[in-house]
Amino acid sequence: MITSPARPRLAAFSTKSSGPDPANHGQYCVELVKQHDFDAYLCGLLVPRSSRRAYFALRAFNVETALIKDVARGNTLPGQMRMQWWREVISAIYQGKSPAHPVARALCEAVQAHNLTRRWLDRLLEAREGDLGNIQPTRMEELEDYAENTASSLLYLTLEALHVRHPTADHAASHVGRATGIATVLRATKFHAAHQSLYVPLEIQREFKVNVNDILRGPESPEAAQALSDMFFEVATQAHLHMEHAREMLASPPPSSSGPLSRNTITALLPAVRTTMYLKALQKNGFNALDQDLLPRSHLEFQLRLWWANWRGKI
Image (cartoon, rainbow, N blue to C red):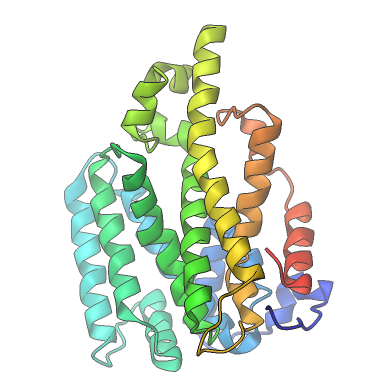
């Protein structure tokens, strides 16, 4: 069972709650995440103070590597060079060196302070590098693998930063990461298509006879609109199933030599809240992932849901 949570206050959502950061590279990471991944920033405000710097270092690394594709769009060589630079940075960090880059320095501190597993950082970077080629996944399993290697890897590292090392927590993180990765792909479908990228598996696109032009310009007929909805439903169903698996595992964890799940497990998995909100909104609008109204206009509801999930210990 999840241990009884301490009751965080709504004041935890204030940016002042983390206090002034004496190290510029730490604050740099916070601002980078706030600018490019505001959902992750809000989740981070509920992370315990002792782990918050590591959390933002990890999320800043995620932002840095995710942005490489956008900067190098149309020319993979600069992206590959930047990925190689990050590969060398990670190697240096695990040799006890601290490269002169704000995110790298913060990541080095996080690795040393929390003994973070290098495999997850390498796996995330490899997935980002593979993504530079704009290759559409053929099967659903390929999309799930991408989500596992990126979103799930980041959650494994977050669990470690919050001092959670438990097999059930890891299994739940795998499912939450896969669900989050799939939902993120759905949320950005139109944006990706406009930049010659499509993450909906090709076999599913072909199964429902969806034309890429219907994604770029919108469906031109009721039949095309229904095909799009059916395709998005098929993909969203996988995300929903992963979320359900994660909840089942957290609600009734199997016996483990690691003992009961830590309260921090839920805090590490708070990205599940946005995923759940998005999937419910997608279902409500008939699985039209191209609807721009699905994208958040206000963060207040998300903040309250984050606080509520953290308070009651359930995602």
